[in-house]
Length: 436
Length: 172
Ligand code: HEM
Ligand code: FES
Image 1: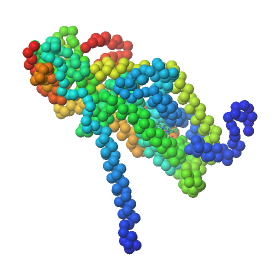
Image 2: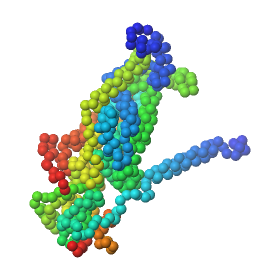
Image 3: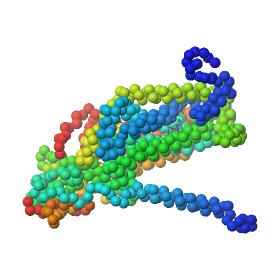
């Protein structure tokens, strides 16, 4: 055991042998969900950028700050706005609490999206020869997590009941209502009436603070569990392939289950056992240390941004006048742009852009994302590799889609002036009369 | 087989029964829960509203923000147009022209002094509510108006749409 004051204070015990390092993971309530040994490559920053972990850390930060915000916020039409103002200006460190929550929410949208891009570019959604599990299903779980992240953001920014919130609710409710046949019912179930009032606020509050986070938590747990059942990260398959093992045959071994030691198959039996010792390192301390580092980094960046960036509320909700221009938060601007551009008339029938841009196009994109693992017929041997030549076409199509979304966001953010008229960023907006 | 017969219900059938019953029980409840979210009674402002005596309305238009309607009066004719954009429900605003403009309604050309503009996605509507550009799929609705029997106030029924040429004749 190393001496030194830090070591003496922080470590009561330090594993001396691989066996003890194993135990350090398995016997610890928090750590036992990690494998006791991991492949070096799978904890490298250049493979995953740790974006999944960063997303998970952000979710934890959001849960904690959100919980405390719940003590201060009142979900009522009369008091929601003023309670938000109190959080900003009256409560001790309320501005900080709200800032961290707000920054973490936006960062989470970014990190989850980047994580999806990383998984796509490394082809980690594929079922590879070394993998006994079902990575495609984890990709789909991931897409659900992305949807949940967006739904949480949406329901979150409705809560302050400022102008942004109010008109976003109106637009959201009417997009739902634009679904043929059952639209009105969906809208009624969503906002509990025909206008935005107490019912709507309460529903979005319960969704934001309870239902969606619970779903998120459960799905995240499943996501992580799947990673282990799929034999670790996709890059690990490369190692077993490189050693020429091809498809690893399952080996029956002892594994820990809830009921004690049972015999069965675990992931190491399927993949890692084919990997030589030199490619593996003990999770304790290597994995644990990195998780700690990534968590700390995420937290520090979130805190710094929260101190640096202001998030002023807009004016209190005014049902009589929408702000002009009325813009959604940046991550929904591409949808707003679609909604605004896609009304068309065919055979004398007018299809509302709300339905086309707000429901049909996003559903198609979603469906495309879901079938990606099943459409991709490239050799599975390049699973877990960044930008392999065999997936050039897929990567180009995906990149074009991502760029389109980003372009739409930029158009919405920088080129739309009053009444959603197009102006170049350097053009002057006309001065609007204040009263109509 | 014979053994199962003596026992009455086979294990497989029991599973089917219990499984089916569980499905119905869970599915049925799920339906009830969802249905409960669609309100049967709306505690919302009335759709039929009294907006005041005819003579309080000026010539031209007046925006009644609380009811989300524009009330128009030309000589002794009144009509009401909704301010709720038919695209996604933002409030349209009146934008006055600096000079009257000639616009075509089908074959007829009329002179108009203003139009409706929606701030959210830029739909524009003629003075009679007809949409002519932007994502709004239908014209702004006109609502039925009448004079209340009891006190002579103007009544607007936001539950009932009328033709865009319908007018309410008033005394003053
Ligand atoms: C709340 C959102 C999410 C969280 C917290 C999360 C968490 C994680 C974590 C911790 C990992 C381990 C590797 C890493 O850190 O990059 C991972 C891997 C993975 N994630 Fe996510 N994820 C989320 C969303 C998504 C999304 C949106 C997708 C794709 C649509 C996705 C698909 C995958 C797949 C397929 C893997 C395995 C990657 C591999 O084998 O290399 N996840 N996720
Ligand atoms: S709500 Fe009026 S244009 Fe979209």
